[in-house]
Image (tube, rainbow, N blue to C red; front, side):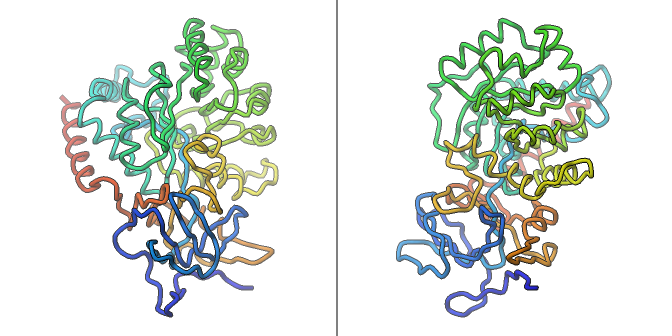
Length: 451
């Protein structure tokens, strides 16, 4: 039995490799030497990666540097595709711990906890155009990229905040699909890294009139359409009372269920709903930590997989550790009642390549392979990951990365061939200043909320 060992490789000159050199690279051409990476076959490979104009243009051992390219030594790292968080509500960090023990239907009730929730919701809704709001968003986005996330589906948290979220995602360097709700306009200028979409109102708000408005909006431009779908039993009761059927069937009947539909949660769905989602090639987003702690459990994953539904992972609201979400789903699939599947492969795809459907036009594939966008998460190979075994008939590398890895091990994040995070620090903004402004703002808001 042989063991895969990293961190003691030699450079071409014979010197011991010491990792990435100082100062992040913003060049259009670079060479990543001594790269140990998880390939599309989910096995560990050892090669050099050449990157040209955001794309992985060459993969081979012992590539010689070209005169005009930056060279980085990846020894001591394990490279995986950058992760995709397909459901976030930014900025929501203000609400940490404020919904503990309160079901969604009782949020903002007439209790000290509920009144504090309402006050902070109102603050966000009335400050979306302020510098303070931008600080809140940038702080949240820094937390995403520092755990290896390159792509987000942004549902927002405040009224009329879409353009701010859009701009901040660009500033940080994230690839994003931003939900513009009823303000969606196909003529809104975007960048190659940003897409925009629209929204189907949730069950308690949806009316025949609003449904027609969404149909007209989608018929005119075929945008991405997102909705929180059948998250709770009371939302199921709402839609059945008003429309006589489920949200999925409402969307199907209205020609709104297709390959550009993204359905969050899908907990109270039926077998008929799941079959319709699969046949339409729609995408669902499972947010296990959020819905287990604050809603009504998990979507029926076993049936979703049986119908070959495209499932992605989201963190949703307040809790944004995608590594915890990955491990939670892995544990769920370890239940003896679950049919035998390659759990590591299925869960890893949910956090990476399954999101290609959403971010393909932004260049994201969730794979490290020739021709793919250079969206790469570099994890330090620490003792926590060992032993790493890579044999022709057996590998534990992906398992150990998913089960023992985490945001604290993320050293660097590359998006479109640019180091957005380097040595654990965001490179695209002044992280220290943002964190300082954020802490001052939160302290002031909490004091004001006690008044």
